[in-house]
Length: 281
Length: 309
Image 1 (cartoon, chains in turn red, yellow):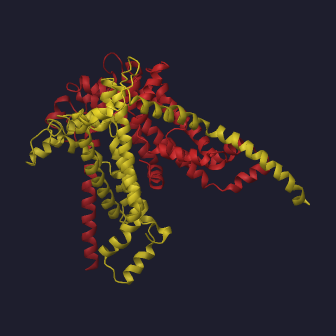
Image 2 (image 1 turned 135 degrees about the vertical axis):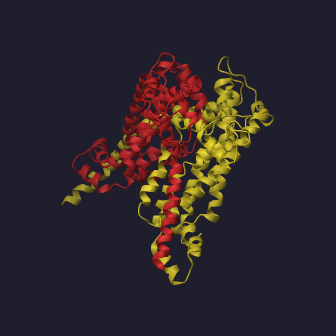
């Protein structure tokens, strides 16, 4: 009786959970399947996930881009911006976190409170003056406005995450290093940074995904189409060619998600742990 | 012998250390500090000033006092965007969290494959905010879209959900709920923190599963619920990309999110002063709602260390 009941509740569980699971990944599978469908099928056979023939041409047509600029340019732009932001975030974020976690200086608590407050600050509040400033110094239509936040410690949430992690590293290690004649920066470089690696991986992954996805900043600062990132290019593709070439559009959409999906495939445990412990997005 | 030597040396070292610490401390946080002053604090003050002017990027700002704020009160589109955004946040956030909690509870039963399913459920949270998914959503729910066709085959509705003023907002709400994976994982982590002894003791006392849920699980989870509620609500008020790309704020402004209207005002109509006033109103709204959460938290958030409420 007991086992029968267990069997029943188990089957209900798996049916239910698989049902929701299908609904969860249906849009993603649909995107990938449709990116390989012939143009007419995307609408006439919309629900199906199986193309009647594999139209790899959609990918080459999409890659060729529109308005004379290919997606190679857009991907290159996204890679440049994202890699600089990620590397900058790791370097500056970790050193800022080290300062807050380990060094004593005047107004530290007040400044830490400022850091925490900026986590909840809506971007809209600084958007307009930032634009005016970058416009004044002639940085509109350059990558600098997109790169600068990454060179200034990155997202405050990342700094906070790193601070919390450094606080967990035993101080005895620092003290031993001081006895051995290590300087403050020596401790950061030789002791903290190597031990910080797990947290840095989490920060790198999320920083990569958020920067890769970013839409608002490139939308505001990049008007010159040779500078457009993948997100902006996709949006323009949708607006100008969307009604005629859904296949190539969905092909490029799938391609744009590839980095995130690969990160998920390889670092799934790391991501899940990252949000479970810190509450990241 | 060694100790005697150390006392005077360490004293002088300490005062030197303190000065050195001030220097190295500020040096190490300088990337953030410079960024904070130049990109956050300065712009915030500038934005406050601009909100009292008619700045339009082309000519110098003129002081207009409270005119921008007064005009907001009679701006129909602004009031509409407030209504839409509140509706969006107060429907999508609770639904998303209820889904997240329900599935976290289901996965917490430890059945085989749970972590695999949980991982799959998390995928939409990773990519949900992307332009690619906006493209997909626009197609799935648009005219002749796959979901539209499924709904019409089931005889639920024939309409193009995105083009219909009554349903467009729900398409965007659905996109948010679809991303319940990340709060679900936070809930799962919270559930695993609850000591099993509590349940064992309750079982011994004859408490039913339902009773255990309301007396143990839910109270012990309140800090996590609180955290998710605050973060999701703030995010909800700032939502931009989805509405901008999928519905363009339409039809009939039914999905005109606050952030979309602000963007249009600032960067399409170049009414920077007016948009700055909107940004400050948004900040005040978020601050008020967040403080309501924090002020009421002592009545419903249960912290273990206090040994009660």
